[in-house]
Image (tube, rainbow, N blue to C red; front, side, top):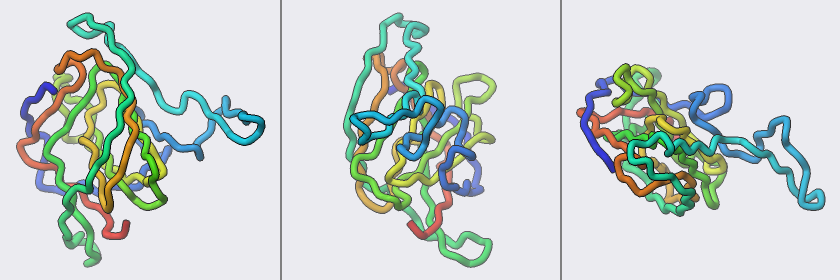
Length: 206
């Protein structure tokens, strides 16, 4: 993974809100059987409901400098919970949890989807996204947004969207991951080490 440094953070906390279609970033897709569209159909002899095209499967490796084609890759990932710090949220004295994020990454030529395996209806992981700055090479600190995600929801980052590495809270979670890759490290993933960690405020109730 190609890595560089940046300073896209401040001392203020970013409040994570529940991920829904209404509040999601335009390039952050939600994977859920509860979401339907005009192409939703009943199938499998009437025992299933299938909704196609719920998130993008972007592959623009033909634009990569190496010219090497991207191929579909399905991976599995087991993720232990990230460390959180109990804090006072400063508003009404209610205890909250702070998650610190020191790295952001993006996949310039591919979308990347995470689908939980065996998740439940509790808040299970945190998603943080940001747009690029005016140079197009760094995350823009003014656009950082954070979301709490249920264990029954998957997410898809479209190509070029800065995001935090997987941040599970509460208990260990397994994911199926789908993306395109061409084996050129700096084209498959770009990473930025932040000069100061982003501080994400979570509800203490999970």
